[in-house]
Amino acid sequence: MTSKQPNITLPLKLTFLIFSMVLNCMGIVIIQLSAQKIGYDKLGFLESFKDLPIAIFSLFAVNFISRLGTKKSLIFALLLVGICSLFLPFVEVFWFFKLWFAIIGTCFAIGKICVYGIIRNNMTEERSLAKTMNSVEASFMIGIFVVNTGFGWLISSQFGEYWKFGFISISLISFFTVYLFLKSKIVEPEVKSKRIIPDLSGFGKTPFILFFAVSFFIIFIEQSFNSWLPAFYKDHLKVDSFFALQASSFLALFSYSGRAITSRIIQRFSLSKYFMFCLLMIILVLVLISTIQFFFTENARILLFLFPVIGLFLSPLYPVINSKMIAKIDKDKINTFTSLIVIVSSVSSSLNSISISILFKNQALNYYSLYILGAVIMVTLLSYSYFKLSINKI
Image 1: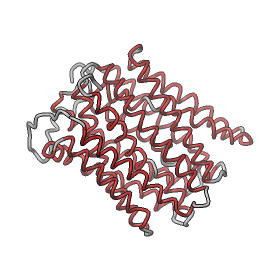
Image 2: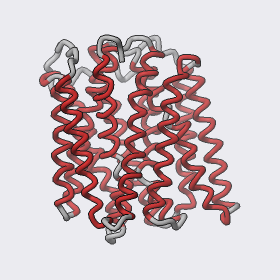
Image 3: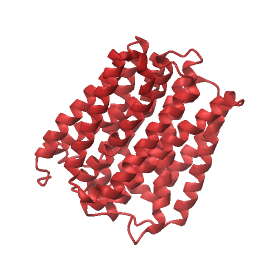
Image 4: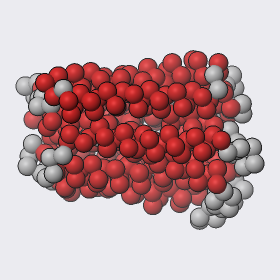
């Protein structure tokens, strides 16, 4: 981050790695539980048990973090994730997955607010903040790759029936990250308010509304891939679970590359122009995918290699748009602002999962790429309006 806190970078990246693995194991859970004859309608609502607690708890989390402190709050969230993941393999009932995702969602709300707050309190210049944001969030993509690859190998092995024991490794990483935080020194922001619900005044301005709308659809697009791409590969392209998860891992690998590259080159380009360029490239790839789906069905297997390319251009969007807005936010409001980002993200993820499960239930997977393309076009239109509007008045 900065020269004052060189020892905090690793635990922050590990925090995002952990939450990435537990949040994005949804695709694995969907594949495994659907094989146990649990319907897509029920699995579509499973994501709501993760996202709705995030939305409900996020505003209260600001007061919780202010009272307990950023460091203790992060440690609490990571310990809870570690303990719950440790118990998961030993519970066989479906309702425990609902409870587990609810706990994970609540902990993620705390974790993300804390991480964003630490970054904002140590970075001031917009481009430097964007570089740091992309660097830390790149570990989120690594988490997706690791969880899909690791569970893919476990599921396809002779020990496939014990796939849930893979969550024990997530527990160990969580406990190790807690140890690193205990050894780290973090400057805590001054507590200025003890309100249960934080002050939301000023967040209703047009730039904020446009920003939240853009964020909503970016998460909408990301979750279309992260949670449902393995199931699309398995149901529509007729590949086995192992190959579906490995192919999805390449999306995460491209996504990591996109964020890693962005963190290195972002200072050379205009943030808004770079953002719009990435959107244009996503549209071009999706148009190509849709063309193959509808007119060249005999070559449909090539989609296994085209979908991951989208990650290269999709992954920079969220960190870039966040960093551009966060750089304008007062430090004493950053936790409140982050909580609103988390709420918008969770609502978007939940609505997307419910709606895309309808495509799966009705066997309308030919429209999967068009469904995503519609969301990308919405992001493009909203982003153009957002960047045209001066945000210096915030």
